[in-house]
Image (tube, rainbow, N blue to C red; front, side, top):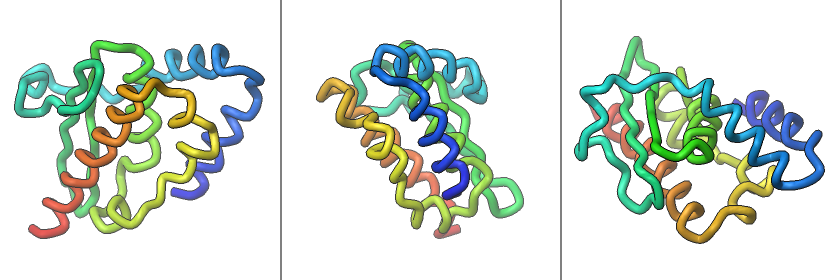
Amino acid sequence: MDKIQEAIIEEFSIFDDWLDKYDYLISLSDTLPAIDSAHRTEEYLISGCQSRVWVDARLDEGKIFYAADSDAIITKGIIALLIRVLNGRTPQEVLDTELYFIEAIGLQANLSPTRANGLLSMIKQMRLYALAYANQ
């Protein structure tokens, strides 16, 4: 997982300003694994986000696979980054991972307070899925 985080840090380091980084985040929204339309419901909606964000997870052979969607393209890019790091990991790996790339690329510092809260809510939900699967 550190290799993926290092790759993300390197990708963002080529951009000098945050407008370019936001454009890159928007382009990442296309890489987001699609969520089943049946999971675009209140049950999967993350509270605390400025925009609407749905996250689902499934356990397959001991590894978690996430799917998500959002009605905001920057948020879709952010959740795509989180999924890129956490997808296909064991529940314990998800729980133990320090998502240091967020600070290293300056993401949280360059988000509005409500988007920053949303980012924390997305991470919390992904870890709650991992906790639930770890206790099965």
